[in-house]
Length: 409
Image (cartoon, rainbow, N blue to C red; front, top):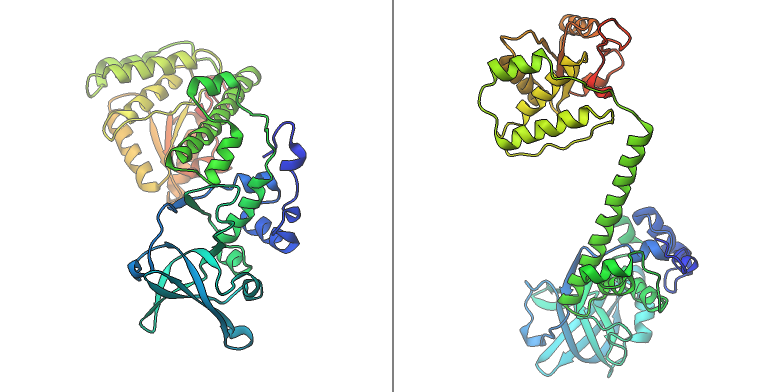
């Protein structure tokens, strides 16, 4: 994620961020595909934990997900030997005491966690030998609590088992993120114009990046999420629009010039029910697109039983009237068979021939279906992804009746 005017900062390798180093940078790249400062800033939390409330020791129960406490470290001691060594600190407030236990990072913690110091801790209560304790809590001296980045909500980040084994868990990412956010340039060129942000009341990119990781409150988090979601959708829409313009300019489609006898006969004599206004409108739009000589990409959305298959059929009849064949691809064999039966029933008393081709189609039937498709005797073929196998050939466009696949439209 590069930002105009600050490319060097956002493109800086993560190994140069304080607290990361080459080994953690390798883990971040292999497990999360994060290589630079910009990647890390774009690695958004998947949920947040409210840090506005401070509990008392007497309130803690084992079924609580997370608790935040403020109090004094009374004693600190080590138990066990070598790999089984653990650091145990007795934490006390005015209602009681509870043990804090660490199995990792002990060397650093011995220097940081001192008896008599006042700390804020955050972690999940657990029950061991009928005694409550907190294993591997976050701990911060009261003098530096939320220093520089006041936040009432703790971000949680996705990690993997491999990254956790290499000491890159959600807490570690949060610490890295705090260091990085504190280094953010005071001004970042915004990739959304000011008039767009003003019109939609969107906060700046810099404010969004800070508050998505360290929201001051629920309102600021909501504003950050709105800004970043809009930005993603905005640029995705621009990208799709650019592709559409380029496709229309560079790739021409076949022109369907007429509404012929197959479409007209089915509409007048075989339509099972009167079309709704929405169905008529969609069919009209499809006819218009197919007459412009451009490739058409269209999503037809509707509830079950709303008539989507019928609209698809009438679109295929339009292609047949203009000398082309058509195919309908379904994701599963069961759905392909259902579509085939529906189309075969609707076209039973017409001149339009329908075939079925799936992965389980028997050899003899498959050979006959492929032969009929290649000669143009089949107007519509229904199937699964078997339709795009190499031996599936539609009648070429240069044949006398100019029959070609709808897929090339």
